[in-house]
Structures are given as structure tokens and as C-alpha cells.
Image (tube, rainbow, N blue to C red; front, side, top):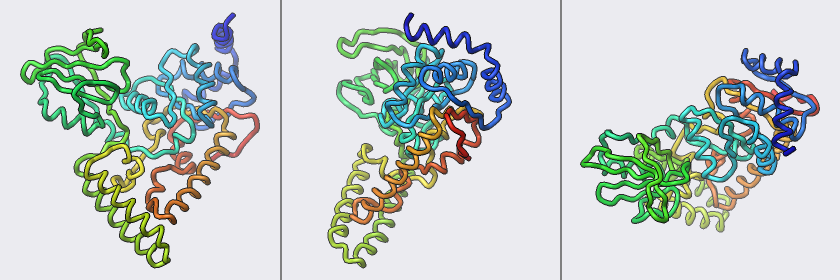
Length: 366
């Protein structure tokens, strides 16, 4: 029998185990913190799958690293009814996960703790960058072009890859990052006449559809009203920090920061999105993280709470040391530490969710 078949047999058997029933009952009454002891590997995946299949909201699973996340996904895919998405440092996977959460779809997000500790724009800002098209709807093509650029899409003459769009007469082609094939929207004047998915190499129509939601092509969204504010905040902090470097006679760091600030401002003037992640703290006073995208009452499963905690603390220590070094060398400004979320803040945010901790030994976590 295959590994998947064995796991399914175990899953069926587990439904009758009293301890698993109790865990599910606690989740149903929204008891905030639960502990599961002594499970590893496939056994743990089977229990997780049983919880995921029974729960009606999105589920987040935190893992210590990408290797652990991939191994867990390999076990879960044959056991779970809904989508399972890896959330690590890859932009495409992150976008798909965030977009499905915004659309309130039933999804399981398996996230590395390192990725979960990266700052994001708030869900309400991200949601504003979605575009909806439906047959019979009215759109202004010039306005749509601006909205696509705002959402992180690159305008090109002909589509080549995800994250691009092109316009030819009354035809709008878009290649969202969550689809295997691009979308074609055909207009008659300002009315949407048809929508279809098509094959990129030969342009052959694959499927006609009635409507579609186009997700952003970037998780970094900067509204026009925030651009000047961001530049102003960047200049203010630069002026303050450059004086400190000058007063400490750090000539190399002084020159480095001047050159770095000029580069940042040039990128902002040309709106080069690829480096905006490191500048997010200047554009937003409030930032979020992955956990904030889950609806209240969701379940968060900790793959191995001890290892996750140790890993998070190590990552945080290394990041802080690296940040201090870069600031002293004039390669970064102090506020840019907000690109990351500290582990304690994530733990505080978890209090609105049902947390299930998998571990071998008892740990005082909260």
C-alpha cells in the first residue's frame, strides 16, 4: 500500500479516538491554547489533516524552516480536501496565500517562521489592489491600466510571464501570479464582451469564463497619497542619521549613507517596486504580518513549538545584530528594522486565534 493509502487508513481510524474528539471539541468552543504530545512525522500530519478537514475557516501551520514545511505538505496533500500553500520567502507563494485569505477562501497556509516574521501592508490596503472583471460590466481602460500598475503589474507589448499585462486595441491581457494561464478581457467600447483563459505560446483560448478576480502582482502596494509621505519620512530620518554619522567621524559610513539615500530616492521617483520592501516602514505607520490576514477564530497549528520558538529567537537575534551593523556602516536607516516583526508581537497577535501546539515536552509558551 502507498504512503498516502496508509495515512488515509490511519485518518479513518483516528476519527474514533477519544483524545482527538476532545481536541476538536475544544476547538469548537474556541479554547485558545491546546497541547498535543508525542506525535511526529506522518502521525502528526494525520492528526493535523483531521483537524483541517473538520474546521471551516482557514488554517495556519507554523514550521521551523522550509525543509520541515515541504515535508509536512507532502504528507498533508493526500489527506486534506482544500488547497495547501507554502508560505516562505518566495513572492509567488506568498501572494497566492495572502490573496486566498483576503477572498476568505478555505485554505491551509504552511508557513516558515522566518517568513511569518516579515512585515506586510495591512489587509485592507492589500484588498484595495484587487480588480474584478465580469461580462457585461463597464470599465474605463485608462483607469484600469493605472490600477494594474498600482497593483504591481508591469505593462509590456506582449505577455511573457506572470505579473505582466498588455493592451492591444480593445483587448486587455493580464497574467496573474495565481493562475497557470493568462486572462484575456475583450471590450466593446467600455463594456466587457468576453473573458477567457488562453494558452500563452499559441494564444489558443482554453476556457471562457463569466467573471474573474485579478490579484495584485506584488505584496508591496503604495497608494499615490503615501508616496510623498514616504519620501518625506525617508529624508527626515536620513538628515537625522547622517548628522550622527558625521559627529562620530564615520567618514566611510557617512559617504555610504549619502549614496544609498540618493539611490533610494531615485528608485522612488521612478517607482521601482523591487526595492520597496525595505522601505515600507517609511510609507506606513501601521504594518501587519501573515497572522493578521487570518479571520478571527482561525486555527494556528505549531508543527513543533519548541523548535519554532528557538528558531524564531535565533532569527531575531541574527537580524538585530545584522541591522545594527548595517546602520553603523551607513547601509540602512534605524527605522528599517520595522521590515521585520519580532516574535513576541506575533505571539501577542495569536491570542485571537485557537492555537494547537505540537511538542514532546511541556513548554511555558505564553
